[in-house]
Image 1 (tube, helix red, strand yellow):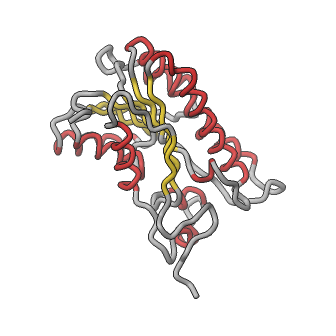
Image 2: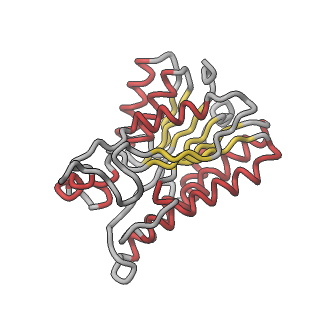
Image 3: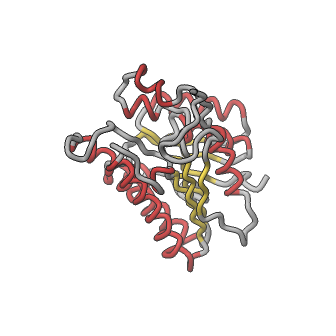
Length: 257
């Protein structure tokens, strides 16, 4: 068990890919710092994981958009918990689906602040610890939207293109310190993503996954686990994962004639 007794910090761990990553890493004996905005869900997940696996968990409730709150939460960890071996930058979202001429600027701010600045806010203090340790592994959860732009996805796609660029930048800047950096870019994953994008409109959200089998959060978590358990001399820089029925950001075989 290569991850046994290591410490992993996972952002956006209250649902979807983040939660699945927590569950997969816990099964490997990894101690977890799970973070998110919904404290009740964090506590519930932390308790469930410690009951099921012989690990320790720590919960931190904060919004990655808030730099001061993020740094304060990470800084509040005692010295043992601050020795983070693995960082999974998973927190992210999409809001709205509109043309650039009629999009909501507040949605733009939320997406850029969460998807881009959120990664920066978390990575800065954690990477400093990894540099002091001389080791670490950062996994950024991107998207196929970071490779291709689709109609009315303008700002979300821009934010995920930025995640891809940041991953490359981290890889270069942290190379001399022996820190691994990996990017995982999924296509459609059946999570709260669509419901959040359409602001609670479940009927519209359900249409996103209609007629085909999208990826599951567990598919991405299993991939992250594979990346984290490669030999010391191997770094998976970039991985694109699609459902069998999805060819790109917009072309999906929904079984329709």
